[in-house]
Length: 142
Image (tube, rainbow, N blue to C red; front, side):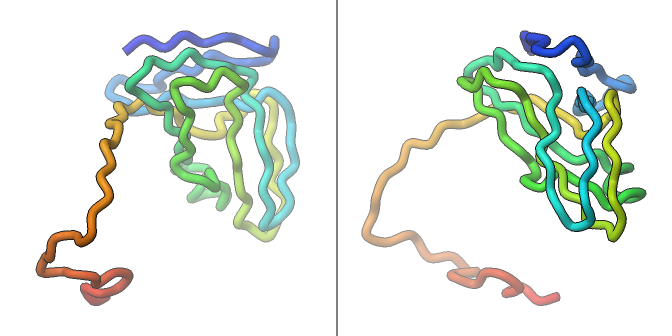
């Protein structure tokens, strides 16, 4: 699938796959940002995209950043709709007790293109019964 990217900032780094078979490409920060403990920050990538209709871009955490630094994407996965043309930003949260320093050029998240199915919504008076019924959070045990 083809993705058209626009560099909005001279420090923007075009994402690429790190290894053959990777699902996502890495997004990079364009400027340094200090994220205080237990706080969030919007990290700029300096990129805008022309996303094909019928797809979305998902912004996902980098596992190493989450494991080693306790920093992750807050709204994971973040959705970038096909009709959005603004700068791609990444909302990071620092779950640690120390300041996390984002450096310019640092890989901060992964971006994956996925197909989107549009809903045909029908309002009904009742939904069908299942063996699970209305059992929700924790209803199947621990």
